[in-house]
Image (cartoon, rainbow, N blue to C red; front, side, top):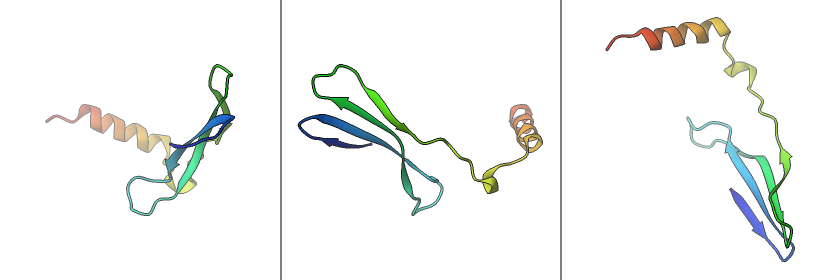
Length: 75
């Protein structure tokens, strides 16, 4: 969360990482929220849609099989 406060408003950018599995991941703004001076409430002013890279997508049958394997594995 990155916040900026001035005389008229407080603005907060909700930051996300492209990955948490490797160092050096890029950060980007997922959403922005604003609270204006003397105006009750929080307003969302920006929302970046979530995009999964094609390289990270797996076929549904692979995900289904992995779920079945994980749920039926005996200790």
